[in-house]
Amino acid sequence: MDQKAVDLCIYRMNNAEETLDTAKLCIEHKRYKDSINRCYYAAFYAVKAVLALEKVDFKRHKDAVAYFNQRYVAVNVFDREIGKLLGRLKRKRETSDYDDFYIASSEEAAEQYEAAKRIVKSIQQFLLDKGISVF
Image (tube, rainbow, N blue to C red; front, side, top):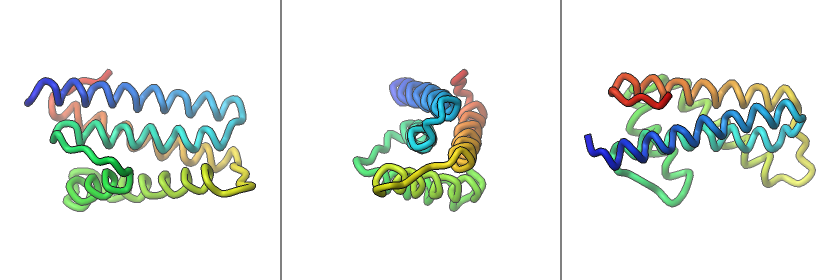
């Protein structure tokens, strides 16, 4: 495996974990919209960590997510639920970030946090199975 690709993968996973921690802090400080944003990005960075191993990158989020779903979810490398959770995280983040007068609830933020945590943990396990430790 290419060491530069592995290093980028590890960097992106560390970023995902840090961003997930930030999402939790946002919930604790009742910054629910910020938490929803951070949850999506934690999952997105984890997805990009997987793509780094293939040396594949995209400028647009939707292209990266679509590629991940096609190459990993559709062929059951990751459970289909991971793809569904990722899609919900993306939609919720867009609503939260761009809709005027959107008010996020603590329940929504907690739900998004659990989804992001599940995605990050699944990808950590995938990487561990490949012999890449990101802890």
